[in-house]
Length: 137
Length: 154
Image (cartoon, rainbow over all chains, first blue to last red; front, side, top):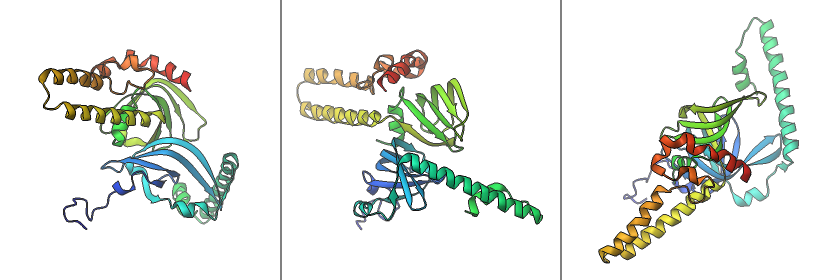
């Protein structure tokens, strides 16, 4: 690499600007959009963003527009491969259907949590419900 | 255009702010600073589950509690127009550089005018923000007309 380049060898996002990226947030949501800008905090500007919801091997896209994302909420960024994007092994379904599927999945998860914490309680173990949320699913 | 500059450009526009705890705030941006602290006007707050709502005339949000902000598509276009205008101005300035002094003066006047009108060019509620320098002190009166203008457009 060019020694004169002050960014050589440092991790930065400037090369990702104007590319189509997937952003995974700390709350588990997936956003896909064109990265228009970044700053030193890794705050991001995404344009033409969609929120993609996955349930099993089905997914649905909700158009969301322009985002300014506070950097600390980002888990990872990934460039979308336009060729591979054409042949996803997943099936796209409508927004209503995916929201329905998501709701059912959420209910199943809650039911499972309920059973797990009940079983633990019977054995004299009190476990914080939030920890179960994160680790058992 | 840095993310926080874009946020500044979005002043007086409607936006949705989601906090880290999942609550969302819908309102018009009054002001913001370099820590992403923001003032909103005509706010509707929605609980995490989306089942409870609160209405408030204004609110202040500490930047560190924000997860993300969603702003109208046209704000990015405003940035592009602004960048074009700036580069046009710069080109003119270079062209005129070394010319006689009266030319330079003619050219300087409109440029400073543009600066004061930053963000107004394509804003429907531009009238209220006419004087960029007064924005902070003026916010209460200046922004009142904005919500209606924006709602009508939707």
